[in-house]
Each structure stands twice: as C-alpha cells, then as structure tokens.
Amino acid sequence: MVSVYAPQIGLPDDIKKLFWEDLDLVIQDVPRSEKLFIGGDFNGHIGVDSDGYDTVHGDIGFEERNNGGVSVLDFAVAYELLVVNSYFKKKEDHLVTFKSGSLETQIDYFLIRRIVGGLVRIVR
Picture (cartoon, one colour):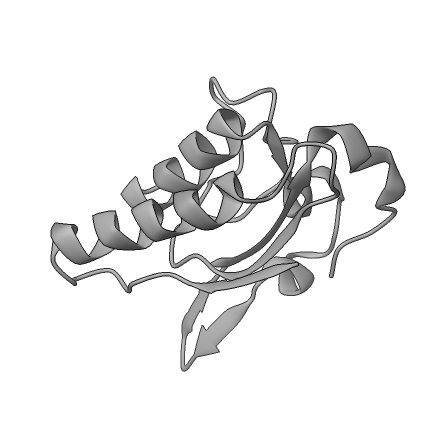
C-alpha cells in the first residue's frame, strides 16, 4: 500500500518531476508478483473519457483532463495499473474529492495492478 500527495498545480515542474521519479523508485521496489495499491491526492484531473488511455481509464471521471491527469495516466500505463475510480459509475457529488466554496474537483485516485482489478467492487 502506497499513499501519495502530489505537488499542487502552480509549483515548478522540477518539483513535480521529482515526485514522479520518487514514486517510480518506490514502485520499482515492489515485486510484480505482489499486489500493489496506490492511493492519494494526485493533484490532477484524469477527465471523463479514456481518450487513448483505454487500458487504464474506465471512462468515468470528472472535469477535463489536465497535465497532472496526463501524468497519472502515463504512470498507470507504465506500471500496468488501473485508475479504479474511473471504472465505477457514481453520482457526481460522489466523484468530487475536493470542494472549496464553489470549486469542486476530483484529484484523489486509487491505482491498482491490472492483474488484481477484479478484486475491487467499488471505490468511494
């Protein structure tokens, strides 16, 4: 189980790059035979549609994809992970993982190895 908190939008790209490099190092130490669960605040939007990420995105999401979301999806592709939040239909207010005033967004995701995807029944 890995818990993450990615750098926020607006921080320099070198800080964001360091986060992904550090996460790469952590994941590379987990044998492929082990179950892997990664959850947390990725500070990115994966968007509503899979749009080229069919192997990791289940066509359920919130808002439009941004660069942070592309990083999440690229990471998922590289490590054969599923963004399991995107595979379960929910009411819109259940998709929202951060709310402040009138701002509502989905930035928290749960990633698991594709080989154990069938074990997950719902993500909230």
